[in-house]
Length: 412
Ligand code: RAT
Ligand code: ZN
Image 1 (cartoon, rainbow, N blue to C red):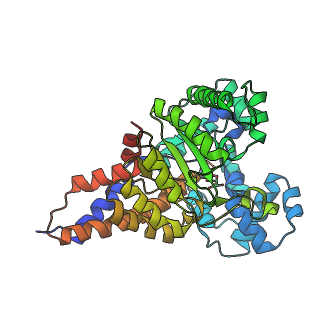
Image 2 (spheres, rainbow, N blue to C red):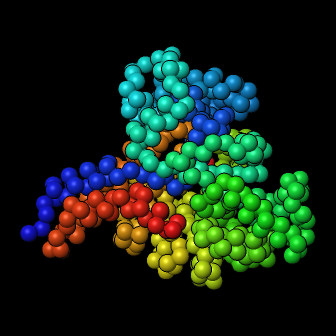
Image 3 (cartoon, rainbow, N blue to C red):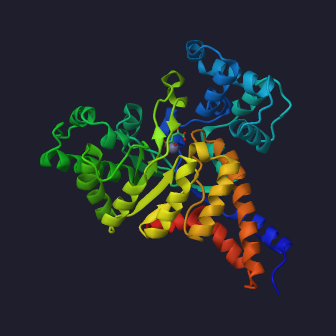
């Protein structure tokens, strides 16, 4: 007899909440990375999503906003979005979920009580607490050796926290020529803007050095909608002659995050990026012509999601992951996850958090778990309706694979 929808719902809720997450793309750092680690109420409120929303809602002059020190920006955003208006957006709801899960007073009109709470926390203790509340076992960072501040931290060989894995992020290496040649030269690599054979060997040496120093679990880049592969451009040459050989030798995936249009509104600074529909034929070429390399991909525009799921079916060396940034909203996560289950079955990672502030792990995963569970209930109920029995064990295994196992197996 087919399982009842109520049994399945109970099993799915239990399994999705119990499965610990390996969060495969974030911008978080452990306490040993000092000032790079962001946490607490002021950082939550000055998340770039909320900066954009509050400037738009208030029509404050850009310069006036940026002239405020961070605590004043936080107070401004709180007042604008949480006191003067109903905080209905997903980013606002996220802050409230975090405060609620921490047991703070959601009726408070000012930040005094919340700030008092965070003042009593230590970075280490709070990291443990958040990972536990979010039920996250591993956080994958985004590590950019060409960022001066971050490089300085790595050069001091910070103590590694085994819960925080590193990822070598290489946007400027693909997109920043010729300027990036000067930067690499400054770091002791014999790199010239001509991108000759010697230069490519030195780019490989740079990649190998930083993969080793970071013990990176994959290499990543974000790309604009205009990205094509192959094309007569530095990005194709660097991918072919440097990135792919280094990744192949070390069995590391190359992650492509496709569709970002940087600085569509520069006055918003880091809140000013937009997106565009990409042409995914380059992703197909990359996967098909480099079968001994592994690739991961996520796309920023809603319009590209169907093509990406199809690409995931066609290339066993491609791992589809996450609902990135502007599609990390419940309505879109739901439609994207449902479509991926229908096209890819159990073989993808439905979500990553992209958290920049430690505390965001709590809400990003609470909210995503709710949507993933909703879709899984529907899909397991449909399965049971065929007459094929559904077991509690396979529901649990599916949830574990989606939230952690699939990605970890892809790395191996
Ligand atoms: O999602 C974000 O916070 C963006 O600002 C980007 O960091 C994006 O996720 C990226 O990794 O480029
Ligand atoms: Zn990101």
